[in-house]
Structures are given as structure tokens and as C-alpha cells.
Length: 120
Image 1 (cartoon, rainbow, N blue to C red):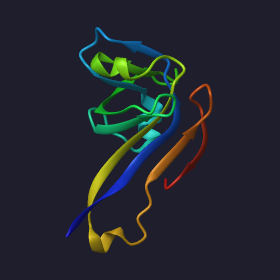
Image 2: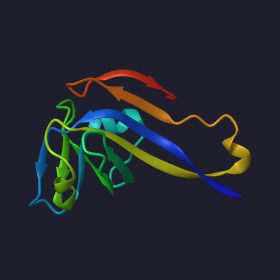
Image 3: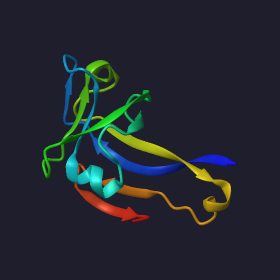
Image 4: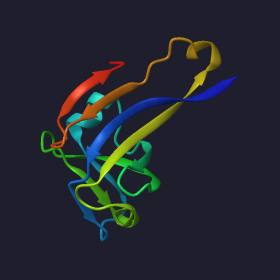
């Protein structure tokens, strides 16, 4: 049997911009994507800690090292610059492989720099 488990999480990501005119997605600094184990265009679930909004979209890489977290398209209505997000992706895992499973988690500071990580 397959079960769905948390694969990757970026915790306390601060929104740096919102662009309603863009096609859609969430731009994430490429270095943060890689460190969290997320792939470009991977489906993600986001929770906005400021207003309680939850939304699904996909991740696209932003310029490395800038700390960008940009709400694009319709999801730009789910937050504003300064809001804090939890960004998650999930994987289907065989139940037998779920024992000892540990997701990759990075926690960010106010400038979207990594302050802690686990599961790497």
C-alpha cells in the first residue's frame, strides 16, 4: 500500500513580492529549492501563517541567493509581502519504506536565510 508523507518543507518563508499579472506559481530562490529537496515545477501546498489561507500551486526557481519568495498569478491574492508561509510537498511511499521516513525541512529567518535544517 502507498501512503502519502511529507517530503519537503520550507518553514517560515517570508513573501518578498506578489505579482497578480504573472501566469501563476510560487517563485522560490533556487538555493532554497535545492536545499529543501524541491524540484522546479513540483506541486506544493502552502499555508499563510498571517491570514490562514492555504493554496496549491507549483514551484518555479528564482535567482539564486536573493531569498525571493514571490506569489504569482491567482495566489498573489492569498498573501502580501511580509507574510510568512509554510511550503510543503508530499511523496507517495510504500508503507514498508515509511518506517524511519524523515522529510527534508529547512527553517528560515526574516531574510529567508536558513537557520536550521533536518532530514538532509
